[in-house]
Amino acid sequence: MQDFPVTRVAKPVFAFSTAAFLCLPVFAGAPVLASEVEAHYAISLAGLSVGKAQIKGSLEGTSYTLNVSSALTGIMGAVSKGRGAATSRGNFGSAGVLTNGFSLSATNGTETRTIQITAASGSVRNVVIDPPFVDKSDGGDRIPLRDSHKVGVLDPVSALIMPSRTADPLDKSNCERRIPVFDGSQRFDVILSYSGTRQVRSEKGYSGPVLVCSVRYVPVAGHRPERRAVKFMVENRAMDTWLAPVNGGKVLMPYRISVKTMIGTTVIEAEGFNPG
Image (cartoon, rainbow, N blue to C red; front, top):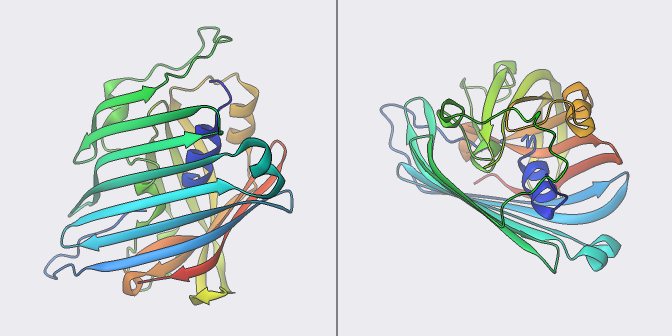
């Protein structure tokens, strides 16, 4: 896949985007009230400040809308003018979030790419990528995407928030999960596992305990398994996310994401965090 800002904006902010991470639950027998969550993040690469990101979420009734935006700043921003924005929407079901659509637009200042995913109840109906990804070096080793890979999945934005599985959002079971993600061209899993807890203090908003989860990336389809970058990420053990409770502790949302890359460690950490 050619080098383009969408791969630098959508997946790291998902990343582990894990995501890699935003799922919102319905609690049986209780009404879901309107709630707003918002977080502002600083992005660094190898210890150098390179950008800013923001998440805004609106929960109303049984529906949700989530917005993510990011932009390179400083020297990186002056050189590439890279920025992106993504939106996800859907409804809540008894099993968790049901994605109903995703859109992303990313640019490097001279070129822009958009991705539109139409979905219903977590099943992908249509994907439009403009302009399409072109990989001139594709040697025919790409794992093909099948219809079965687009069922029961989360888009990269809906994968950023997770429902708490217990009354205690810091219970280690909230780290033990496998998140199926489809980003329009690839299907992959983000696997979280419990690592511990710690205390955080943002400049504005939330201060308190967070759940620390280690992260693994498992490609499923749409990728080239022999590609160097894919092998690196599969073997990567230096990834984690810190999850903070939002919406009264019913939902967990990334306070910090750290991902080792081939050119240094990327850290996305909250400067302001409003848990709603």
